[in-house]
Image 1: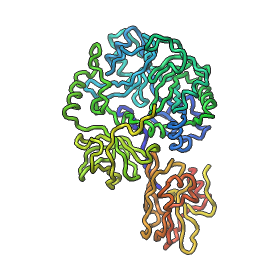
Image 2: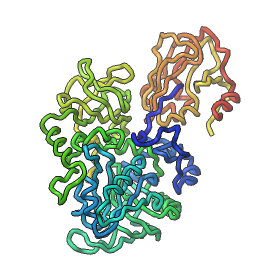
Image 3: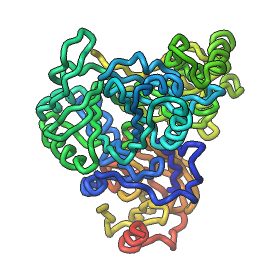
Image 4: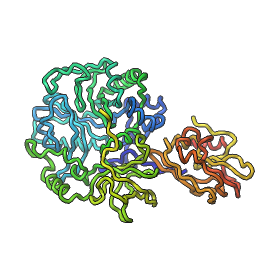
Length: 403
Length: 126
């Protein structure tokens, strides 16, 4: 056999060529992954678990029970100070000054021309403290941009990439597993003004400092799988202890360690974009169908405002290409970069593709010409190494959990 | 550690070839290769009646993260393909040397450069 690998994510365009890259970094859980027999992969300069056994079984565990991930490659940046919110409102496209402490937002950082530098989760930990979580491949770019854009603001930008390990417990059993580890959440104010005393008070896209199994952690109800779940930011020296506590607590519920291979198929089924695939500096949030993250009515100016206004008009009146879902009629798997065709003409390009364990068929996200973007558009095919394979155009996401 | 049965011969491209019986030999991929691929989700096998040539591609295997060309370790006519694998490619992962065999060939030319189990194990480890 000769094998072509389709990586989970490419290096960011700003990253050095692989030949010039330094030795891959290892997380605090590296020895533990190896003792579990993980297949490791180079991911954005980090050596990360790709899978421990069958990636399909890991995927199914997260959909039906629970999975445990090491996501320590993610890039944490802390922003503090009286004008922390004002700085983020200027540097990012969202309205972070309006975010209440204890809450999180999905947002983006753009260039002045509107091109996406990265997509981010921002947690407001306190009135004057935010945690920005960037993709591993873009963390340096985001750090540099935030630092540059902080000029003139009474706020400090701190590189906290080495300060955190990140563990995620994802899946329907994850609240029960976490509750069995006597989690304590620092009292804060929820929407109604009542203090959040326990995990049930921690709603989706909330995050607060606390402890899990006695380990100090930022406990966040976020994820990238389309399931309920938690992300736990801890000091690297506590990572092994917390991993082992979660493993023991999840044993009866069927929790399994999960690698990046299933994380990619989980997020794809959930229709979530991945930087370097659906998002790039060549695209604005409006091109990616995510214009809702851009808040034009927030206070103050922000980087990219003018270009994004034009991008919003263009996307509304004359969209160049539209992000759609494709479901295979056959069994051959579309991969990033493959051409989408209709009537022998190229009408688009696949950005992510994989066999979907939940649907039992290959699926893809693709940018296609607006004329072919409506669900059910007939005659759409993907050129799979020279063979035109029939695909159905569908609305995203492919999978939505029952709440 | 992956298995390398003693009674089989192996190609450097990670296919195995059974002993020839009544002129016919069976082809599959090794456990080492199956583990490296991850879950196989699609197997495109050569057609029955077609001719395969030792060292040349004759199909492909797709997994979650990769697609691999399949090389024939032997020259001859394909007399049977494993329909069970076509319907359930995960057999390649669960039983690469048994239920996960790929196709059978009426051998016209015995390959001379295949590896023994010990030689293949060394090749795969390297």
